[in-house]
Image 1 (tube, rainbow, N blue to C red):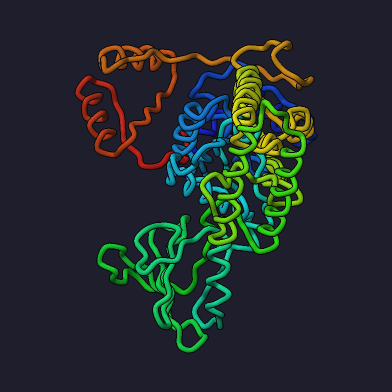
Image 2: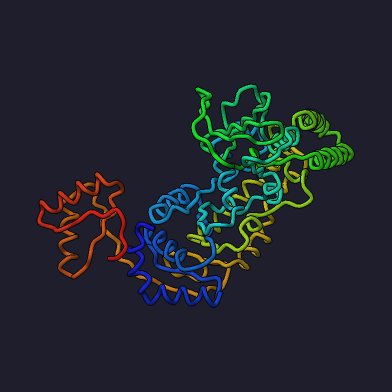
Length: 447
């Protein structure tokens, strides 16, 4: 950690030591009060460096999550941003594929428990239900040089977990077979892989360029992670078709004369979706049919077992959670009355009471600007900090210099995070010209 020295003053602070003591005693929930926006990433990283568990940091919206991710990335490389999966009943192709790739990359990282890490996301991610994590584990295909492989089995598994077979691989989520060569582009990789076979044995593995199709470098092994978030093997497909048809029959049986038009509409939609599912393992709104595919769906908590949860601004996160459930129910009723969806598609969110119960029983830390016992759902152990916030200089160098000189007289040390080396070195030169001794360092081991 190149900024390890920045954490030294905090780790010697009595309040922080008391946080660590409460963590050791597992006195959850713990509410840390009085932090500024920049102070939150500072204390989260300090906690992360002192405990054995990974962390998941939850904010009230994606913009705040992204900002906090950027701040935490300053301290550590083991930080990952998980974009939310929008729960929609319309064509999901309208949603960016890049977000799906980003989510799958983080899901793969979550399921790899070798390294301690920080996952940053918003409260909406906690409200959703997910494909059982065992499906991702079972469909994570590892290939290494010298392995014996069955191309037919690999082809079937790739189709079932969302890959598209093409003539030439040009984008993520595609694969092709040409003679004894397998090309595949996992969504979690920067480059596609070319596997050359000698009979059934893997002879060589190389990354390659999609434009020139030329090899880049040789590798010994790699993994192929699922390309879609709904994994459809034959068992899941049969279950989904049966469940969808049974529910459609109930809808038809209970229809009133006034709603016959909406029933004809849902019959057409369901018929088209089942036909596509049987032929291609996929249809446009498959994500909204998730409850039909699996006996049991997983929650965010199932994926993050053993993690410590950090919820920023619990009051705002709780308010956002209320609006998520309200908006979902409004959309659900609207689509249901129009005959666009089936009744069981209301099971795309985790039950609100269950979510609150799981959160209360997790290893939970909350971050608050002010202490207000009416803000939270739970009784907490409260630990307060006092921070001195800096001025916003808005490019006014003279104000910065005045502040540094004033702090220097009071025996403070000033650390400025400049973002890049050239920027830092220019600032050092400017400060020296103004009579303020300064130096540039790539890493801070000690202050």
